[in-house]
Image (cartoon, rainbow, N blue to C red; front, side, top):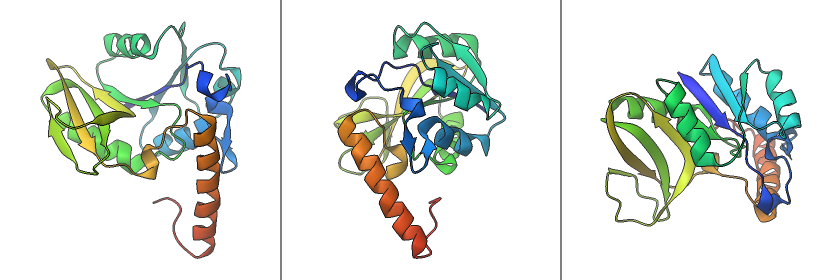
Length: 195
């Protein structure tokens, strides 16, 4: 399985901070993501721009392939990935709590679906469903997959969980750091942080 981590955004809502280099729970966001996906894939690609120097430097520690793009838009970079590779999972580079289990389950679900592009979306009501035409209000989760096959797009809808958290604003950064404190406290009580 190929994994593409998209980390080329401008982070305007975070004051232009390099998201991949922000520390969450004592590690950079990109390190947290790469540690998880390295457990399930040997083919990992960081898609970013040259302005993401710290993220690139951190990613090289994990022996991932760095692909520099111009960073005009997320959509353009995703299209480039789809046009240049046969299949894979695309993960936003701002998901510090992503878990390998989520990626694997979604990947295997995608392999069974007829469409060539599948997006995981979040439903505020917490219901999970698969649909070509959504009647629910949903938002993107930050995970998609693609493969060769029928030229269509499907959406898999799931309820929110912390592993689908996206870091985009200063309020979300505060939330993520508070979540780290909660996770650390849970670990002190003997609960497993990996779940």
